[in-house]
Length: 135
Image (cartoon, rainbow, N blue to C red):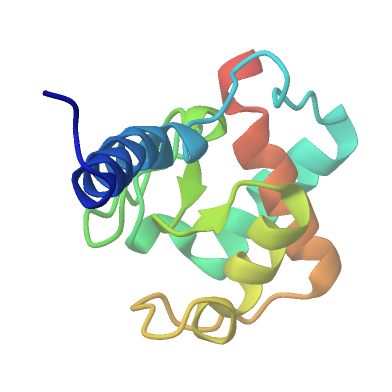
């Protein structure tokens, strides 16, 4: 006996739903080759200076920063391989710089406070974080 029209539609909806649910996590994955960023040395060097001045290490463990080594926020080691910023935002330089500068305005409810840095400093910090895997 074949499936009735209603049973066939229900089965098709279930299969489609399962297939979509399996693909959603993959959309958040970052292709490590196509999205690899190679920041220039100048912005990276300025980024580390801005990180030290703004005190980012008091909340985050940051490679290249010996002290402080905070644990309140996530470790930023291997940041270039992170699929999403703060678990929700696309990992792009413009989004990262905006998040670094004023996280609550980019992601509602973020526990990271607005930082006392300029747009240029935020871009330099982003360049530093993207360059961590390339050192």
